[in-house]
Image 1 (cartoon, rainbow, N blue to C red):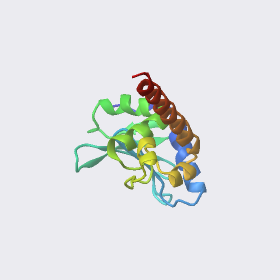
Image 2 (spheres, rainbow, N blue to C red):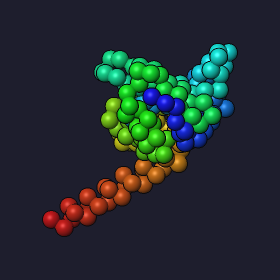
Image 3 (cartoon, helix red, strand yellow):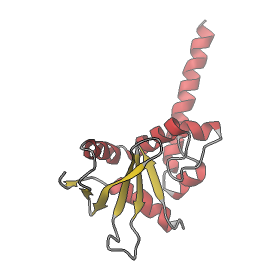
Length: 157
């Protein structure tokens, strides 16, 4: 598989924001992927490592993103590139979908216990640290609209 240009600005921005707010090793979870910074003292400093959920218990290295280019490992599935492009274009939606599917925060990976956080796919602390507080508000508004619509349907019965 060849390297490919990837609009990774949203991923980079979220990780950079979390790092600037004091997180030593920020991680993002979206779709079946885990994004994290390469060590600053390693040969890939400045890159974002990309890992993916291969099975229920196995997480494999897919490659790295450097300056907007994804460099996959030779054994990465062909579907990885298309999935990464979708996630990078819809990062917020992908984080929410991950959290709703797994019940874990799309950033730190902790189990979400508050029903509102489970619906949002991200906890309030991570939303703030990763610069995604607006995401929580957007999802909250969507949930409130859905509840209001359900209430109207019940009243019509």
